[in-house]
Length: 353
Ligand SMILES: [Zn+2]
Ligand SMILES: [Zn+2]
Image (tube, rainbow, N blue to C red; front, side, top):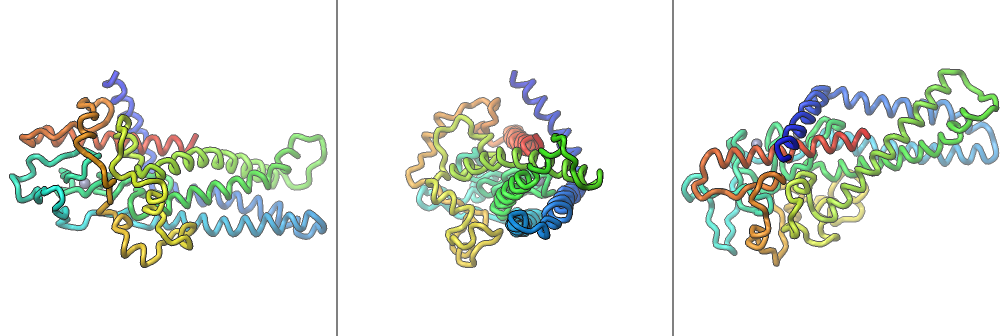
């Protein structure tokens, strides 16, 4: 059961690797959809309707203003996700000593023995591929990515600590824009199935039909994705962590809905709906830099460890063995990697319907 599940996940991942090979073509695809939509809504339907007079002109003005505002926000968010580095580990990064618990810097101990790979635990993990220590919530995807959420084929980038907000805004504005277009083109789409004569060349009619179907499909699939991510933000969980901690009743980073939200969007309301942060937030919120995350004051990691199953079949990570041998470390990396792959697949499948 566990074996077949793992094999299947791996095969789907092979499929995803091929999609990732498309690389920047995905950006052209997104711009292509935007282009077809623009041509249909602005140039063929609502632009000409401006001169119809009466209610038609007023509707056209409203649709065109909303369409262009949302398009600017959508493209701004999109290119912010594409171009912003999701966060990489600074060279020679070392964890700060946890004085409260009296834990010492693990590097002063016996090599990396006893380092833990437990995702619920802030103790330090080590990436064998990058040969460096991993900060909490960091995962490897080609390189180590801070608070990695998933690898998104649509933005040809990893989504992590520094561009997660931009990714969420991209989803938000895509949902609003595609919903607006779906509603705006609905009367034209219905007209296809009526007996009346429809004005326009076959090319224009075909573009309107295509734009309607594409925008409806995106609106529905993005809505699902958006709802999922809103619940993840509310619980202060990444997609990878949600996959890893299925059976965890408590989560150390969950600080309550308001604080969890602010940790992603910042505390300054003026910046909530734009892909940027205020300088003050960037300065005083370590979570926005991706290396440190406050945890629940009353969080008891011992309690967590007793409820965590020891089996790797549900993708929770096995506890570190006291000898810290190589095969144990490799197994933890493998399970962690599998969890990351699962998210990539999930992200892709949800993004396509
Ligand atoms: Zn790495
Ligand atoms: Zn990636």
